[in-house]
Length: 339
Image (cartoon, rainbow, N blue to C red; front, side):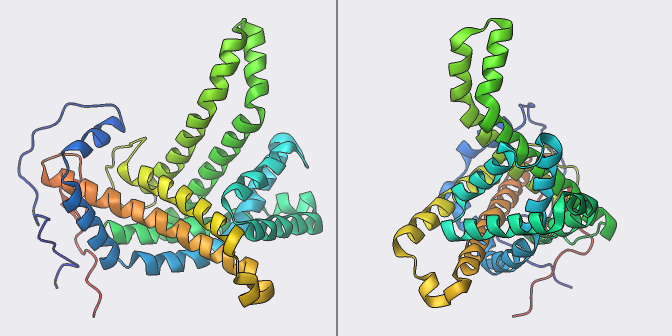
């Protein structure tokens, strides 16, 4: 049986011996290797992988799972916010304001109205009672990301189903906590800074410094979210945690760019309501999910190709395509789809 694919730029075997590089802080090592890459060749590899793995087609599949998972995820986060800060808090309103910042207007209204209707119709007790079922449904989107990232790394899913689901649930909880923590820092960061400055006599300089660093800190939270997806979701082992990876940086930048560009486009050229009528908001939401899924998957392809490059150069901690762990090929790797 033939391998799924052998590219001319990838060596089928591993180098028997490798010189171990000097350890650098997580994130710095991967980024420091970028300067030595042939960017034109690297971009061609990434584009070839995107085409070969049908990334844009799989992003369309992800948009369906995202739609099914969105409202349970928001209900779960809303319930968590209720436990942390009480019902109808500013934190809950901030959650929807943050979503509105990247979602197109009509799609944002559709989401907020739907969640509010469910919350009012169900009541806080029922939402809390059904939180496990809500979390289970919300994790479906993360499970879909996991299966598609396996294709980027050219490995088959071999974890038990319960472990795959547990990973998806844990990632959903972790991302929800990251989002809520980021919102707390944005909404209450100034008050927290004032309290700390007053208690320890740090003065106005500390407050001004906080106002400046809270935005880079927010980007760090988002990069961490992307990094966790790429680290835990695919079925690969012996990965080294990187706070910043080429794929996470590119995926975050692309996601923000397409979100704001799509939002700007709809403000001036929105024809979806004229074409789809009352379904216009749903179509807009699905398109945004499609663009978001494409950004996540492209970031995964970039990380996969980058790690393959490092493996070819003799990095003992890097995995070549089709390897579950460094130097350990998948015994039954993915096969090329029949043409």
